[in-house]
Length: 402
Image 1 (tube, one colour):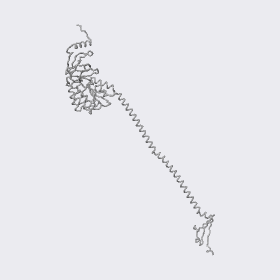
Image 2 (cartoon, one colour; image 1 turned 30 degrees about the horizontal axis):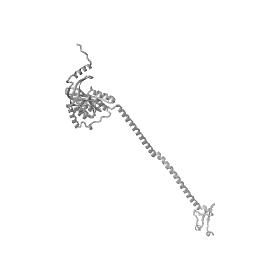
Image 3 (cartoon, rainbow, N blue to C red; image 1 turned 90 degrees about the vertical axis):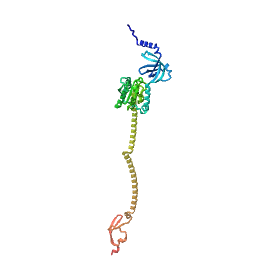
Image 4 (cartoon, one colour; image 1 turned 120 degrees about the vertical axis):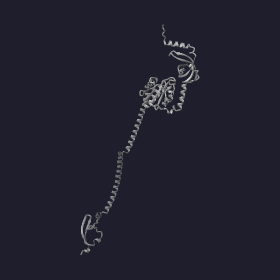
């Protein structure tokens, strides 16, 4: 028996025709919980509908989405009316939704909200408790799966932004029963070793079940008490977990977590350049200030220096000398005048001058001046000084001559 070989598109189109012609599959009403919700910019809505044992992808096109009277949310339990078919391009089975009615919220979503309210009251989300990320970390610890897309994205983004930052991986399960315990061990490891500046905790996107380990209270506590700042980078932009609220910083994706943690080398270079320029300006200003201070000190020293003092003293001495000479000259002139007056007076009373006028000086042999006749009543030896000399003789009064 010869079996015809079909192309992939022929197979998918055949299955699509079968599904499209099935009455039940074209008139479905399906109840389930919404996960992986995405409002596309085109206006279409993409999500998954799941229960405890299964999951199916769904799409509601813009034309039908316009008639929705409420906003779909993660964990919301709904009843979807539409048809099941195959998307030929990918061969994926999905529901094409015409109507969606709100049935209620899923159990996991209710559990999430209760834990969120509890931890909020305990202060786990307080902004005042959150730590500031270091601007220029040297080592970043990452707690995630070693085989997942998250670690690859973090490494790619980090190395692209800077070659100066080391990435240290603590391998941990991020999905499955008790996977959160390994994440807790990773946080404890980095805190005990104090070998990193920032911790990134995260994984790629997924359903609320797949991300549930990051909604565990024990993990929330480990993040809260960590001494090292933690970035929660779990899922996609629309995904929120308890870890996001407790962490010091929430990143929409693992890639964004790396962008937040790792500064751009260009930014660091510009910062260093700015600091270098500011330092040069400060040094230049400091040097100018020191030069001014030195100039002022030199000027003050010059004013008060011993050389200047000596020079000024020389000037003072010259002034004193001139003044002294002047005073001495006046004094000498005055003394000369006085001496001249005394000389004139002396000359006026000089015996020699008197003698020159015809007078004589008579002295006895003992050089006593004879000034009265009583001194000559008896014979006496005399010395008579006249104008041109002296003569000696003996004077004998007449009464002694016989």
